[in-house]
Image 1: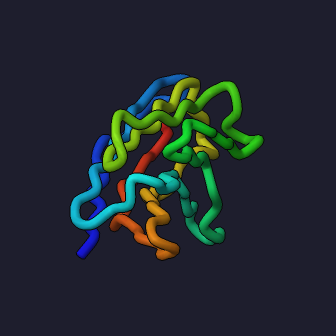
Image 2: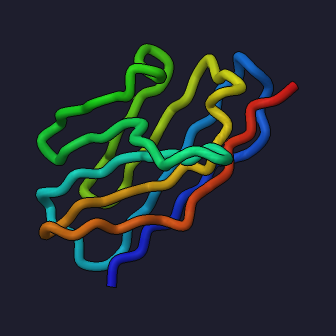
Image 3: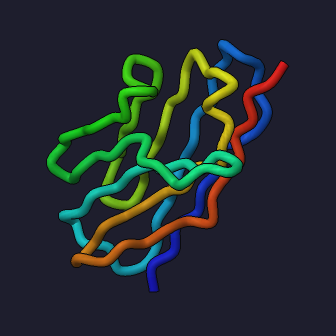
Length: 114
């Protein structure tokens, strides 16, 4: 059974930074895609950033230049968020695509407010 556990969310002022972490456990393929999605109140879940085991990365236009996704192995992924804006407020979810299946964490809340 695959489990994803996110950490690092919290309250931050506009312009501040946060670093999210996601640790996966269970049977994960070494060839996978890991990513971060977010869902703001009243909105649909959207992709924030993804990274493949081969090192390719993709970002939503709204976070390019501010957020950086990275991974240190097949089971841990990070999201460094800088220059945070109020509109970045959302629940952030970790995602892994492995052996053709999608796995999700329970989410961590990021609130950007003064």
